Length: 229
Image 1 (cartoon, one colour):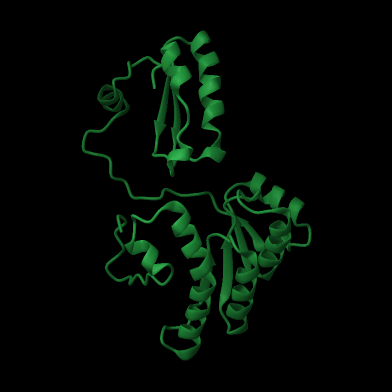
Image 2 (cartoon, one colour):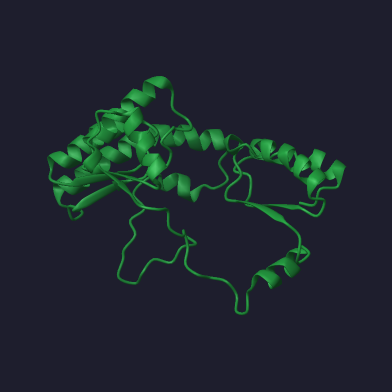
């Protein structure tokens, strides 16, 4: 909702409608709801396309595949009715899948007309993990900005440092993005202690909120040592 769609683009919130309305649900309740709703929303979308309720798309772009068993059937059905399927592989090594899911992901990827990764290293890794994939179908497209340019007038590095209370000449380590436990910010905090021994004026800047309370890193060692963050 915070992103502004172009005036000539209509957004259809087809998936997880109830979950979008009930932001106060607990994390596990939302996960259970999504796991139950996800394949049903796949089936409902296919019915809407096949019945003509919505215009048949030229391309379906998949961003994730958390449940490969259902996504494989979904991609196969889409291709069966003449829709090309493109899948962006954001994480070549999946964060939440088991070894069995990895095999399922390979089948999903093989079913797609094209795959997108963000770096050449990601492409090499993907083709190494799934050697049966057609290399011609794997394209490298760097990750672009998630939002438009919205800096306030007159913004500059100097003004940003002043607003954050960071001295002009200080070294700054920035971690930008949603805070999640798998990203290893506890390791970053431990490393920052060593950095601060060598560079006493170094700052650690975490720009982002924890996804859940359990994701919040323990920064108390930094506070005890007087490392600014």
